[in-house]
Length: 129
Image 1 (cartoon, one colour):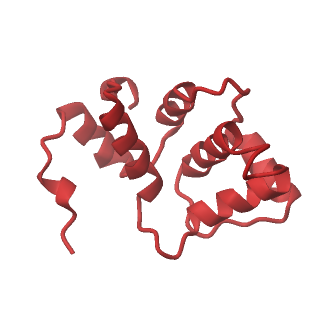
Image 2 (cartoon, one colour):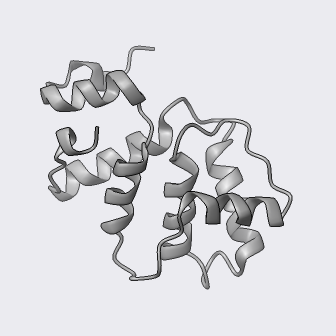
């Protein structure tokens, strides 16, 4: 099936980002995305997320770059203490999202980008490279 977004007119700097990183978060874009989360919890960095996963014996099969860091921070900010009761379930949530059998390459990035577009939040792509 042809993705419908292939017909979108993307900024040149976004095309350059995608050329290098594909539909995945690099460190700079992940930090930008996490900074836009509204619940104000302290952000987790890559080593903290990987330690969380290790502590709960969770191995990811389909992670690319910083996608798991974005997902962990989203789960922490939006769901921890509610539908995600504790850290162990946060680690399981990261696994479920990253290794979603119904997912596709770039699903986390694409969902985030759709939210940014819908909310009208500009992204300085040349600063993310």
